[in-house]
Structure formats: structure tokens, C-alpha cells
Image (cartoon, rainbow, N blue to C red; front, side, top):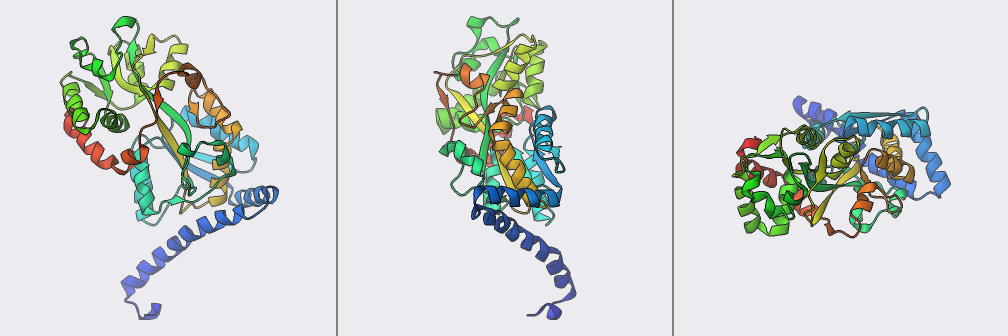
Length: 355
């Protein structure tokens, strides 16, 4: 059936969505064409395209203070190309990207997410294939084979305690120690601690893990939104301990004089933060260029200055040095990502205070 034979409402729908579908196809085609060029010519074409576009828009659930050095570094390296970072907290970044795609109006070029639930968007064709040449410096577990995503940094999940209120010998030596009577009414927990929840279920086994979580809920937890805020509240003495936070926050606040340290409770689990180019990016070349910069040695060294653990094999951080020789593991991120919504539902069911 030709366009002119369609009913008027369908013509309108076709006109609205045809350009969007076309852009979704051409983003990958444009970036794939770069791979066929020699390195110097590839870089020149990418830079020319990015300068023409003029801007890269990045959605990130990394704090604003940590993103600013990255965007500033990028703009210093590539004058004339603006890097605009939009902070979206927690799991809301997944909803935002998905809803924009569904509406046929993607506004972001690059997504930086520490929420593994973003992996559920793989099936919705929101990730654009982009094989950054910087990926060669990343381990196989830190990148997928198709060029859809790369882990640009890792967080380390730890329990944190107030060193003025908790003696060193009292601090948990295993996750099960959180169930001791000592901690009843003294614990804080993030209201969206879904990755930790899924990780512990993997570690203990589904049945034993759920039993542990129900017992943990009986400890009269106080739920807070935001791990850094939670760490600050522990430092202020509002709580003796937080069940789970990021090691980088603990080290950062501790260096500033806060009475904080992390519980020596192995195994320590990593949770990666992922970067991907939007398959419908309005500025694909600028987005790809920013991705290259983030994954480069220069960008990864900036990650270290923000008290985070880079994923680049040549760049070390205080966290990686501190945990050297420790039992550090990576959970099955695909299992958590694919089941993210179900994990979140179960989390809220077991911890009704987190709603």
C-alpha cells in the first residue's frame, strides 16, 4: 500500500516514526564505517563529524562533581565540541532512556550507568554498536564481543561503619554478621540496593539468600536514597553502620577526616558502571568521541582523581591497591541485569521500608 492510500492518522504516525527509525539505522552505519579506515584517517573523520555536530549529550548517574572533571577534560582536549552531562539518579536513568526511545525522541548520545538493569535494554535495540579502539585495553569481562557496551569503572560494594561508635573488632567479618543482635536498629540501607541484593542471592543461593534478606529486614533497618548520602549519615553518627555502599565514598570521606572505615567482610564484590552509545544518538560522532575519551588512559586517570576504580588495565587506583590479594569477585552481571525488575520487586517486597 502506498503512503497516499494510507488513512490520515496512519500517515501521521508514519511521518513521525520513519525519520526516527532511519536515524537508528544510520547511527550504527556511520560508526561502523569508521572501523574500515586506517587509525589516523579514522580519527580525523570522527573529529570532523564531532565538530560538525558540536555537542555530545551524556546521561549519567555518576555524581555531578565526578562528571565535571571528565567533561572539562574532554572539552579541553577537543575545543569547539561541547560535552553536556545530565545527572539522572539511580534506576531512573533506565526509565528515562527507554521512555525517550519509545516516544521516538532520543535526546542523549551516550549513557553512563551503574545500574545493571540497563542491560535489559539490550533486547530493545537501544544500545548502538561502537567498537572504540580504546577497548583493547579492557579485559574480556569488561566489554561485550559485539561492541555494545564497555565497563569504564568498577565500584566495590562494602559495609561501612562509624569508627567512633563501632570498635574494629565488632565490625562484620562476613555478610551473615549483619544479623547479630548488636546491629538491630543501628543499620542504614539504600532504598535501591538491587545490585547488592541480586549479588548476595547469587553468593548464598536463591533460597538461603532470601532467608538471609528476611532476617536482615528484622534488624529494623532505616532506608535512605543514595549511597554517598548514607555514608555521610554514618559519618555524622546517625547510624552505626550502612549495609552496603561504594568503597570509593568511604575512602574519599575518610581522607577528609570522617570517622569511617569498611568492614573486612570478604568476598568483596565488584559492580561495573557501563558506557554505551545510544542507537538513536542525535550526535553520534561526538558521542563516540566522548566514549573514546572516557575509555582512554587520560580519561581513566581522571576517574582515579574522583576516587573511583577505573577498568583500564594500565591505570591503577587506591581501591585496587588496597584490595590487592583480597578475595574480590565479579557477580554475574547479565543475570542481575536481565532480572533487574524482578529483583527490584522482590527487594521492595522483603524490605517494605524501602518503598
